[in-house]
Image: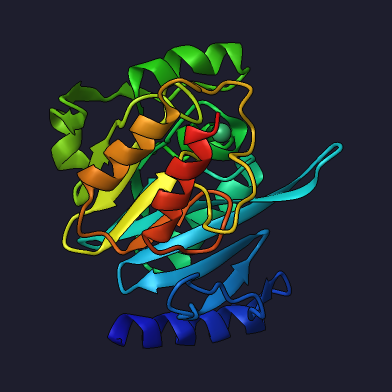
Length: 264
Ligand SMILES: [Zn+2]
């Protein structure tokens, strides 16, 4: 509560200083419980408070033929610093996220993890490199990045039975990073936040009202359903499920994604 109050105060102060800052209007709703999250815009990016220590960032890119597409990632605050989960689409938007963490949350981003090799998840790696922030990814993500014309992350995660182990465990705490198998892409990873009921399914998990699984051009169609099931089993206590392209969800999103994937 204290942090929220401080954040609101700083937000108000920032709005007086900068015309590019505006108070929201754009609140996200949790699909099942109708809980509304406080949101605010800073630069080009919308920030929604999910819990005291978890903020969702949302950036938008106008894709030719598709119109504006929103993409979500996370800022997880721990010990006076933040861990970033996914960049925005661009370096400029990602710079907004880094500035927000430092100036408004007062928790500068120290490390980042990106959840697969597509622009909505790692298009802003250049901004991380310029800021000296260590970035991490699945080894497949760093090899795929080159063919996707994206910069790879600096460091490669090591996995044991699906879970990230090794130095990243300490450096990215309190994230519990899990590779559920291929789905949206062969390299898609997911993230739980220890000490919370929040898990991030990235582009693997779709909103409970999604009609389709979205872009399947790089998908692992055969394993999609089992990978979505693995995600649900890896985070059995998570009841706030955050995803790339929908507002915050409940566990129904996992069930719905499995059902869509079984029809592939
Ligand atoms: Zn993707």
